[in-house]
Image (cartoon, rainbow over all chains, first blue to last red):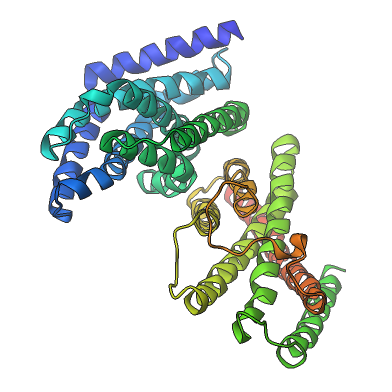
Length: 227
Length: 226
């Protein structure tokens, strides 16, 4: 167990290191997020009140689009030179390989979110610094959900034709409960009328989603990777 | 043997359906509040119940496939999921028609409707990804994985009208709470059997196709090896 976790951490470190050196999915994902943010400003012509009302939804749409781009590369990155086969053949258990990938994708997506959140606040004139800590909690919980399910489906679709297309088709329906929770919580935080009952409900929803899907993915990934 | 089972299920299902439709349209009185349109319940709910039965079978066979690597389980999963997804579509369409009549809108984003649509999309993803994977073992394994993931949504749909603190405009579980008048219970239960029988017949046909497809594939591989 402990060795598996250590292996997961070293896989995550390897992934982060290669990604931070090449920045291939990071650059693409961050600029994609910015483009989407710009597009949304044309799509909706809004006054101040309604901007706050849709802020959570807007932000999470951007994050989930960016997340799909990040996790798409998660396993595909290992395809050249048959690295994936070597990783699977190595003594590392499949679940720690997967967990490492998920952790790396989590931090990469957090970086993208850290870039796009200030831009979002700036473009739409939304102040988020006052609720930074609860927002960070929401973002971390929901981002972990996106990346853990995303990494699992990235492993599923890695050898599939039209990989870039299939991943979102599979991923987004699964993410709906998580996104509902994340969007609701973020909207209420940003617009500053958080009811305690709603907060608890959203938090429970996010935590339950994370727990269920992390357990499912960690348990089942062995069958997916070692075909 | 299998062919006989197909015919038996199909004939029994169709006969029951005709008889049941006759009862529903000619025998039953209108609902006091909803009038004529309430009759959709005899299609709408049984379709989903049958679909969930088939999805459950698919879940079990998917797990069995991962454990035993026998392709028969994969065939059963895909056959069940295809038929069940069509049944979910029937449910969504009939529900939408009923909603237009009763609520004045075709669709409302409440928990029950959303989770059911999600269920449809999840299994649609399953059916979309399958043909994109060429290698049979890989296709079966990955499909089983997706089927297990997708099933996690179904308890949510079932609970969506039973949880105490959820605001939903979808009618409650009338059969459990006794909200369904006694005259309506028999056609309702028969409706479930109709859907199960017709669904089973379709699944058996689909299974036949799958096993033939496997045979063709193996012959083709053999030819290729020569």
